[in-house]
Image (cartoon, rainbow, N blue to C red; front, side, top):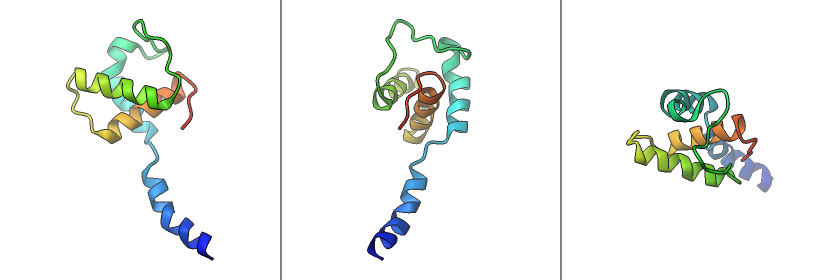
Length: 91
């Protein structure tokens, strides 16, 4: 019973933490693809990321550098889209 209550309590948190791949794709296409491409990812001299954490850091850095005004959710959505589309990285 205790495990069931815990699962019910944590379910909304789990659902909220899921990245929105559609938003990530849109953000990538509108802002990132100009430099990095859409058919394959052009890393502009950088090696491929080893983890979603590293990729999230890259997206955050680009967002800041180009003053995109992205919030944490935008950064997470875009990083997870990139991770799945180009790098086969999972959560």
